[in-house]
Length: 316
Image (cartoon, rainbow, N blue to C red; front, side, top):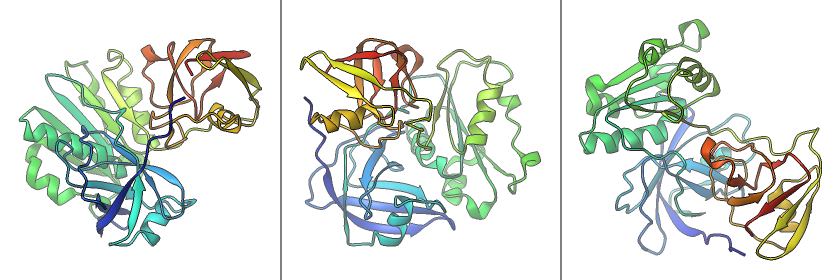
């Protein structure tokens, strides 16, 4: 069985408040070791001071990083993730993190449209900075309530100029940005969107006639792994020859742990891709936000997805 990825010790080298709710953390290796490179759109799992593991998007250039820079929003109903980072992660302290992972990577295209709302600017800014550095064409639409709630706004206006469109709606649904002009006719570009649910639902609605896979989304909200109508099932582990029962009230990942089987994991909420496992037989009830449609016949995310029938066979 694969072992969980070792966590890297990082020192909090910087911490600054970007907006009333958004904070930036600069993290450097505690032992001066080289950090793993990453591409725009990547995230890392941070073991927060509360002990909760949370995923945060990387904002900085990842080609030869000397540090990881993350941005996060302190959620008012935080159960220990963002609240713990803001209240308890102090400059000079240490945190542990896993290696960068990326399920929101830039694909090759003649041009790009980047769309961000709120804290969704974190992975989008990394993309825009890379495209700008490589002189590749792009536009960025940034939607927020107000200028005061717009992270990195001055920096982006100075660097991107007319390529940046900023829209403030004051929290009024009637003042929502009109995306129709950007999506009326499918174009030979790639679109990347990250932000609140309402923003992404609007972009999905206006881009439904575009070719599949041309518009990609990054969703920070965790998936509901267990539902009231879930049923028990079994997973057959082909390589080990074992069969593990999965109760109605547990995800596959937790059932495997209970049987002494360790599988790499990080977010455990269907958004990072760490527990991606090859599916050899059976029909899965996919609940993650990572797998592309063409991957769903062959892979499953063990932290949130389940079986539609009675048995799944996994390459474990």
